[in-house]
Amino acid sequence: MATWLQRIIRTRASSFPPTAPKLLPPHSFYSSRFFSKSTNYVAKVGIPEFLTGIGNGVESHVAKLESELGDFQKLLVTRTLKLKKLGIPCKHRKLILKYTHKYRLGLWRPRAEPMKS
Image (cartoon, rainbow, N blue to C red; front, top):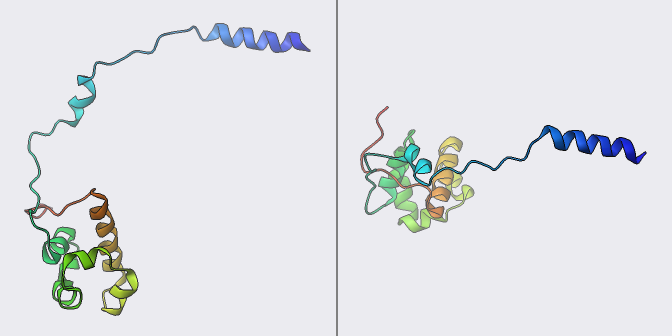
C-alpha cells in the first residue's frame, strides 16, 4: 500500500522542478501607479462641501442638515434613523452614510473641483 503512495509522490515531485521565484526590482511596482497630476482636495470640509462632493442629488439636503445638525462633526456620527426623521430619501441616506464612513477612515475626501462627467 505504501508503494503506490511513494510512486505518486515521486511523480509529482519530478513533474515540478524546483525553481527560484523571480524577484522584480522595487521600481517596477510603482511604475503603474504614477500619477502626473495630484488631486486637489477641499481644505476645510463642512456640510455643504461634503454633500457637494458626494453628488448624485445629495446636495439638495444641505439646508435641512445644516439647520438640524449644525456642524460637520455631528453629521459624521449621525445614524440612519435621524436622517430618516429629517425626510431624506433612502438612496441619499445610504450615500451619506457610506461616504461619512469612508471619510472617518481617511479613505475619501471631497474634491475642490467637481468631477467631470
